[in-house]
Amino acid sequence: MTLIIADSFTDSLAKLTRQEQAAVKQTAFDLQVNPEHPGHSFHRIEKSKDKYFWSVRVNRDIRIIVHKRGDSLLLAYVDHHDDSYKWAEKRRLDIHPRTGAAQIVEIRERVEEVVLHRFAETAAPKPLLLDQESDDVLLDCGVPEDWLDEVRKATEDSLLDICRFLPEEAREAVLNLAVGIRPERRTNAPDADPFGHPDAKRRFWSMNDGAALRRAFQAAEDRLELSLTMGHRESLDSYFSARRSLEDMARDREDRDFSDREALDFAALRDRKVEARKAKRDVGAERKPPERSK
Image 1 (cartoon, rainbow, N blue to C red):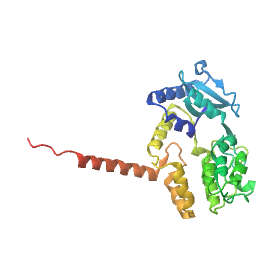
Image 2: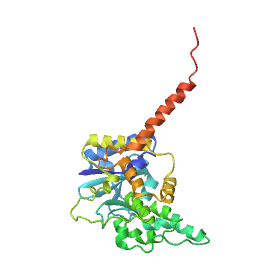
Image 3: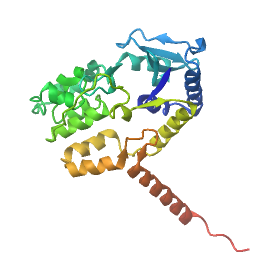
């Protein structure tokens, strides 16, 4: 059985305590060795929109959410019991009809919890940014089918909120589209591996052995250490307001290498990390009290 790890799993793993993380990693290794072992206590998520979502017991409280279908097992999320189930109930794993990339899609109703109330609070509604775009254009952006109408409803105030619900490649393409950069025409090879698509490789790792699984966990920890201090919203605000040029985005892509997902070569962020460590050492050296003469 092929074991696949989603970035939503590694992101949620990082929020647990060290002790809980150790237990989750051991369970992940056990799943890779023997996914059919009865001790894993698989339970189907009955309220999930995706009938292939199951929970796996880690201990009395922690549950891993897996997507089990055919000969693949995908580690999608991990959290305390109730929170893990709530996550699975609001998501499903889809294959995008235009790109063919695997995507974990949030159920569209969730947008009402965050976005739609903004329209009621806005005294003077602003014009829609993408209401004239066709399905074909938005599908070329990688937008899930369920979200086409919501993206067309986006205004300058709500676009960033809506983009939070989209897969990474769709979020980037929609933001580009909003500033006039058209997406390339996309085609889907029917027999292609949905997890082998370049867009899918941004968020999924296929594990062949225990060594690969350990590297994936280490890569996730490195990625967490390299994350910027500013929040995603601030980043997107800057992205959208700057009216970025094609040259700006090309430089960004050079900073990130998605060809080797295990390596996670975030060049620019790695350089910042090195600089931060050097600055910390310099500050420590300045604060070190002088040695007393004997």
